[in-house]
Image (cartoon, rainbow, N blue to C red; front, side):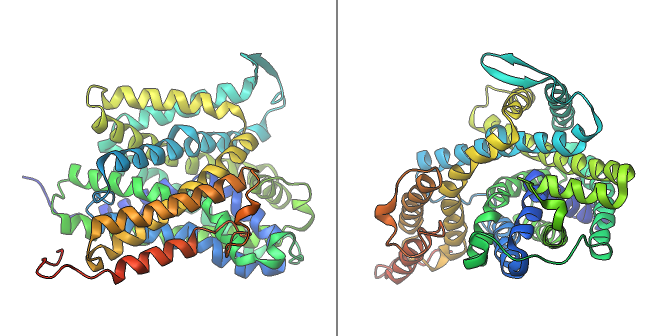
Length: 443
C-alpha cells in the first residue's frame, strides 16, 4: 500500500534537493561579478537580481504546482511542444548543463593542476587535455546518478545537499567576518540602471526556465514516492519551492557582498568564479581552495543530475521508443562534448538566447496565475506569449549585436526589456475581454 504523505525528513529532503538542483554554475559565477561592478549600488542591483533569480523561480514552481505540471496546456499542441523542446535544450545539453561542468572544472579542479594548458586540436576545435578528461569523468558520474531517478531524493536531497549547505554556510560566514575591502564605486550600467541591470543579470542563472522543468520533475518524483493526489503534490512542491528560494537568497546575498568588497582581488576578473577563487585563496590558502572546490563540484554535479534527468524524462515521453536510460547516456555525452567549447564562449552565445526566451517564460507564468480570470483563457495564453516572443526576439537580436536602433524609441529598450510593457498591455487587454453571455466560468 502506497503512503500518500511525506515525512518531515522526506519533505526537507525534497526542499534540499530542489535547492541543489537550482544551485549550479550561474548561481556561483554571476553574483560576485555583479556585486563587484555594482559597488555602491549593490543593494539595487541585488534586488533586481533576486527578482529574476529567486522570486521568479519561486512563483514559477508554484505556478507549475497550480497547473499540476501542465503550464503549457492551453497552447496549441505544436507550439507547446516547440516551446518545451526549446527550454529543455537550453537548460540541458546546449547551455546550462555543459556550463555547470565547465565551472566545476574551472573552479574545482583547474587550480590544482600545473599542465592545465596542455592542448590538442580536433576538427578545428582546440581542446585542453585536462578539461576533456575532467568533463568526461564529471558527466560520467552525473550519468550514473541520473540513471536511477527514483533514488534522486535520497542521494541528492538527503546526502549531497546537506554536505553542500554546511560548506556554503562556512563560506558565507567568512564573507561577513573577513570582507576583502571597502565597497567601491559602481561602473557601467550599474551606475545609471542598477535595478534593471540586476534583473537582466538574473536571467543568466536560467533558474526560471529550470523551474518549469524541475517543477514537473518534482511532481514525477512525488508520484514515485506514492503521492498521487494533485492537492498533496502541490502542497509538497510549494514547501520545496520556499526552502529552495530561501537557500538561493542566502547564497546570492553573501556572494553579492563578497564581490562588492573584493577590491583588488577582483581586478581583471572576467567572471565571478575568478573573484570567488581569488577571495578564498587570499583568506584561506590551499585549505580554502579545497573547500571551494568541494562546494562548486557538489553544486554543479547536483544541478547536472537534475537537468539530465528532467531532459531524459521529457524526451522519453515525447519519443517513447527511446528509453529513458538511452536518453540519459546521449544527454550526458552531448553535455561533455559541448562543455569543451569553453566557458567564455558558452556564456556569450547563451545571452542572446536567454534574452529571447525569458520574456516568454515569464509571460507563461503570469498567464498561468491569471487563467481563471480570463474570459477566453486559450486565446489569452496564445496572444500574450506571442507578443512576449516577438519583442523577446527584438531584445535577443539586439543582445546578439544586430542593429535594432529602429526600436530604441520603445520604453525600456535600452535596458533590454522592451518586451515588458507590450506584454503587460496585452495581458490587461485580455483581462478586459468579457465572457460571452451564458458561457460557463472556467474552474
